[in-house]
Amino acid sequence: MENQDIANLKLLITISILITLSLANAIILCKGYYQHIMLIKEVRIKLMEQEKQIELFKASVEAEEKQR
Image (tube, rainbow, N blue to C red):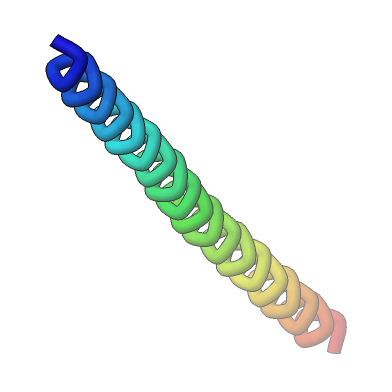
């Protein structure tokens, strides 16, 4: 009976370790995915800002040409 209890305890510890490692892995993967999404959004925002600056530059050039 004592051997059965030790085997059950070992199994419980092994399963607990595997569950803990799985949860840690899931957290790491979610964090990496979130960082990837945030990086994509940041790049899109920078591109939009650059496009806006180009449009403003073109508008200022047109305004100068009209004044001449």
